[in-house]
Amino acid sequence: MTPERLLERVIISPDGCWIFNGATNDSGYGVVRVGGVLWKAHRYSFTVLLGPIPPTLDLGHLCHDRDLSCPPGICLHRRCIRPGHLMPMTIDENRHEAVRKRNERIRERYAHAPTN
Image (tube, helix red, strand yellow):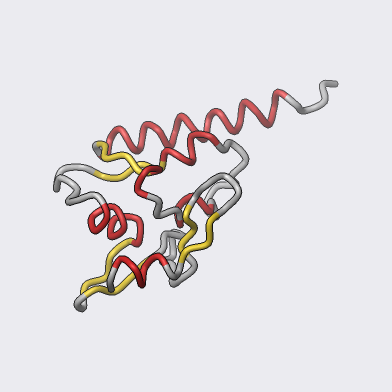
């Protein structure tokens, strides 16, 4: 798949995310098949538009940091393939960020809950 063909499958969201509008896996990440190899769409986008991801690193979605309203498991940010919204980081850093974001969402939800 060429970068041009990949970008034909993008819908630009109001917050600037490039939402991949193609196939997704069970976790909600976009997927593309390139030369018989199945890629997560955000990893392929980053690789073809900016360069290779070091093999020891994962990609975190920075756009998710700005949006605390995402319900767990169906977050559209998993389909964001905009390279500027992706940051190489270790798997542990990415997991730590996921926990931090989840905790922020919980705090935000309870901060607006009525008290008894």
